[in-house]
Length: 360
Image (cartoon, rainbow, N blue to C red; front, top):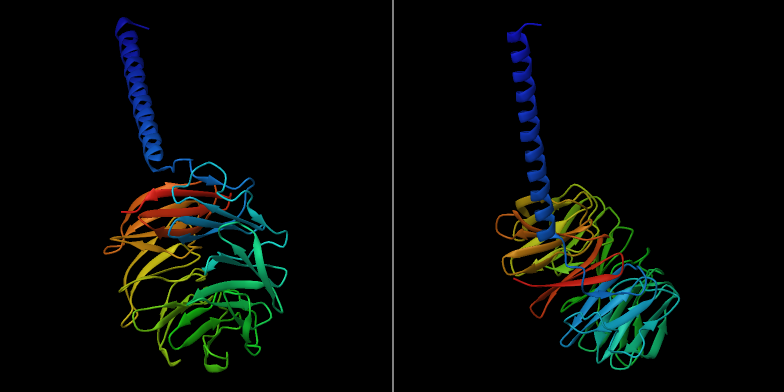
């Protein structure tokens, strides 16, 4: 090999080393940027933690937060979510397990249990004060004006006072109820796995009207600006008048298992495919749609200009006007509930942890 060939070979080797150095620097810079992004977005691991991993749901009161776990644990914690134990001497627990968030009426927390009972727990002491037996697992509870309404897997709705006295029981609606009833001025609205929506009289539980959507309904009905909104497993969002007339529907892609988020004229719905859409409630047209990084399994929380959604293992903030994702927080487990209350945003995950950030 002559001198010129050796010089050219060394030149090529030097150029190759320089390219490798440049590539290595770029890779390291990209890794640092990704790590920095995740550090900013990842949720601070502080908050309230159940002793064991558990799917949990949230209920807010003026000076405390109730955390209800599927395995049968109910805790009362301060709104600031200290890592200290519950203000109760001991969390209320029951081996039957619970099936959704607690409701509150006259200083009692009401939880539906799988052993066909609604249980009332004193919010000051954490002790059970009464229970009502139903014909099936109690799947959803709501309260209004010291009245308690709950559905059961036996296909009936029950009404009671905050004192634990049963007022009435509806007729069999023909299928399981898995979502909490909605109390309105016109009646108690409930949905079934047979795809029917029923309105029951507040005073005695007699049926006022019935509408069939054609697909199972897991999501609790919600009041829109002028209609009742309910999603089903066919991916359809239905708009019903207070008199039981179906006005319009809007199609999404996946199963609608979470209640619609409503705040004034802002109506957002999410589905199991991760699609989130803002709907115009007056004509059910779509204003925007955004694809989230996981299924929407909890009711979206709307605060100010933001819509907050649990999407798989992340909490996502979406601009309510444009649908643009503006913030993401990550967790180690799926988000099970999202709640805005008293200037804070709370979110629970399936590992039994509740986190809090300041609401915008």
